[in-house]
Length: 156
Figure 1 (cartoon, rainbow, N blue to C red):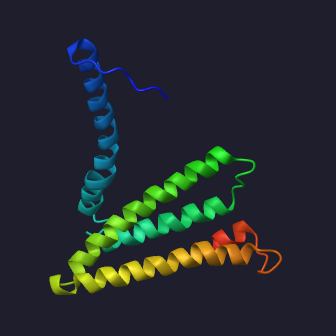
Figure 2 (spheres, helix red, strand yellow; figure 1 turned 90 degrees about the horizontal axis):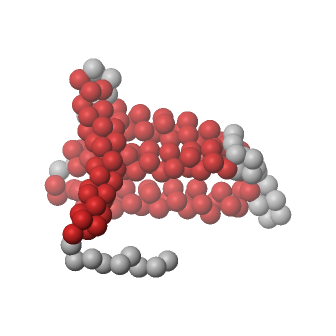
């Protein structure tokens, strides 16, 4: 990859800066609409509470997305499998934000350190189970010999 030539100013530089600004706007708009605006809308309509409703909502979406991943073979439908994987990552990141906010609302300031530690411990245990244990379960020789779809369904 070659380094783009730098120009000190002029029309070419202005076009680059405008392109970066427009791309930043295009990236930020969906985030604000799906985050703050959608939360306000659903809360005003009485569908979701400030935090707990969002935790339940994102957890349900994650379970559905993982079940969907279990039914799709990356060998035959790689683009769909990848899109669902990106969806899981987005929903998981959204859930992480909501859980952090809920933890701050739930715990007094002096308990937030231990609360964060317990959260990370739970997170790490889940990583071990969803990574290492899943590999053991799918090992046909030394493990249980489960299929990947079965493991995904069980983890969901």
